[in-house]
Figure 1: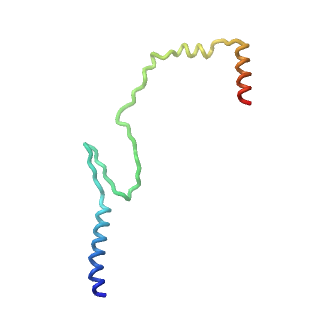
Figure 2: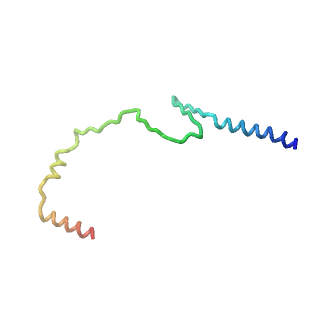
Figure 3: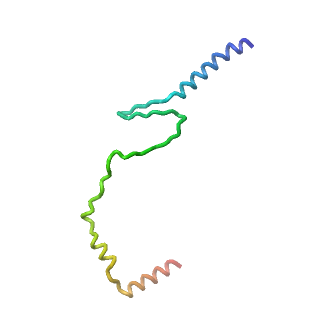
Length: 91
């Protein structure tokens, strides 16, 4: 029994020291970025924009032509033909 206790004590001590080292926080530094944490924390990612997004230039869009096309008159025969095609395709 004494042999077992003499052998078990160093093994238990070694086991506890390795788990204590694993629980310590890990710090990783990458070119000005610091990541601090350990494996027990949940993995969460927050994305924060560091630069304002650029809005596209709206001056070149043909807005008037799009409105005029949507509100332009249509021919009755063409419209009825489109309705018939849509009805036949949806059956």
